[in-house]
Image 1: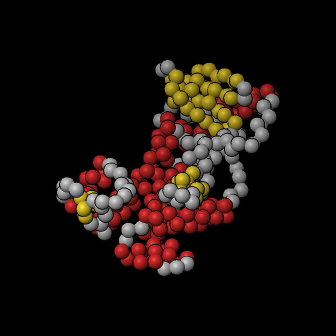
Image 2: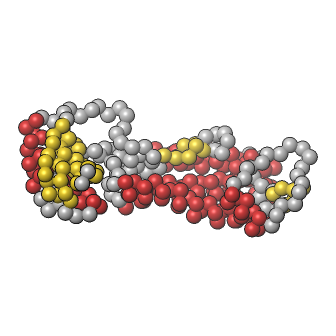
Image 3: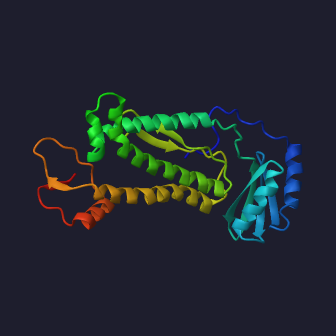
Length: 265
């Protein structure tokens, strides 16, 4: 995930001192029921109030986020000794016109590239018959690989997306990255156009993707094992997918200990 600001945006002009002083007075009045202000500081257009919170940090952020936005600022709260510092930064949010067509085209290209890659990794008897069919129909042998990989990837990315939207962060739709070799994709990225509300929400946004993807990956793994079989290791060359603790656990749960000289196909 990529954080704001975007490359290529010209830096904003520094605010005038008079404007900052007016903003400081307005912001301080909106802090009265949230923070007992002991001192304040203005530096480079950033206004900082030091004092003691009258609410929990999460409640304070929710309240101040809406109030400060009206004056063109974004609040940040951090601990400072026996109190806290509430910083008001010039609105840290990039407003852009969404270009959904770009996301759709990249996704369709990724579907095609994973389908091509899937023809090299196909192993389903149902779909392997298509490999001998001439023309584009031969790509159907890559359907199981492509659908499984894309399902995990799509759910992973939208786990990030919907969690970010839940916390009212401005984010883009996923940009999928097609690759004509290897696994057929380099994954996807999501651009965050505004900062996370706090560290807890940032953690939730970051963790939601892997957890959502795992919820699809494990059933897909179990389905793949149900279609697999144990056979002797071939004498010719072969490729080994690799192993992990989860893969080994699920494999032994399905087939028991692997006999010597055998492997899973």
